[in-house]
Length: 340
Picture 1 (cartoon, rainbow, N blue to C red):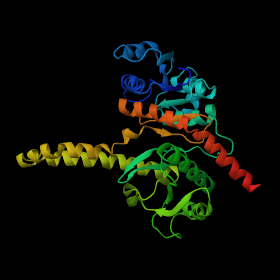
Picture 2: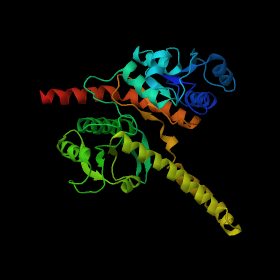
Picture 3: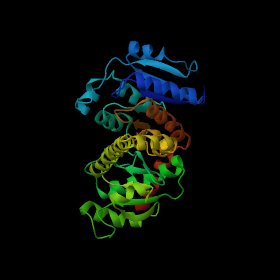
Picture 4: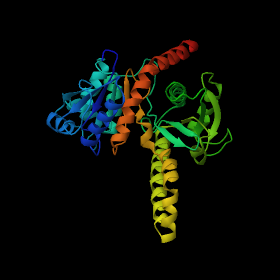
């Protein structure tokens, strides 16, 4: 177990904690022998869930965290006051290098604040963005930023593009990933002030493969591998994506059950349809890493079930093995040195 990657997991965060979180942790441990999972949460509740499962001895340990940061709490105050919460303790484990990564489905605000205040930013990184993988016709794309920086500047977006390119190439395996900025048209002169100012900077950036603007309707087709935007736009895209997917799925199901003939057809197409829809299931791609920190912090959906928790934990292994933080640090420092 000496070479195992240690992943601290917030067992109390999310709508389905602790049972789905613990279940996902157990599934990850049973799938990978190179992971040591540290569950943080109220001991009695977490141990009660662990007793329901079987897993390799020594691969999952438990650390008691008596406090829980609720979603509605002011994040800055919660981070300061609740030192014994699962989120704060998990962040401190990453800071003190007692864990290689921290995964949570808990309060987004507390995770964003804790990531910057406790774990800290890599020197030279101006703002750490949240970067989820979203399904497309061609596979997946990285949406960066989707919720961390609603008032971003052009220099922030350029760094997002660089960090996103590193992530897509070394974690997802996309060589020379195509980078595009979200816009309301393909023409360079279109867009708001932020987009107009950022576009030429991305165009001049030699570290990325910039392909220009991308309109929202082109995102599901996989026109770009890295989709750059500030967090307000990114969060709207992400939430619309999720809402539209679930709505379409319910409409399709309703249509298939509308008559005897459609029900018979549904039986015939069910295997193929199930396989097709699986590729558009966002939970299959794990959580959203908060890129640019001194350690790995991954945020999963508040409604995460076991499968998303499991995939988020496994995602941490690739991140660590590929030394994503080291590559980001090298890229940012190189860019800063080039300006001097």
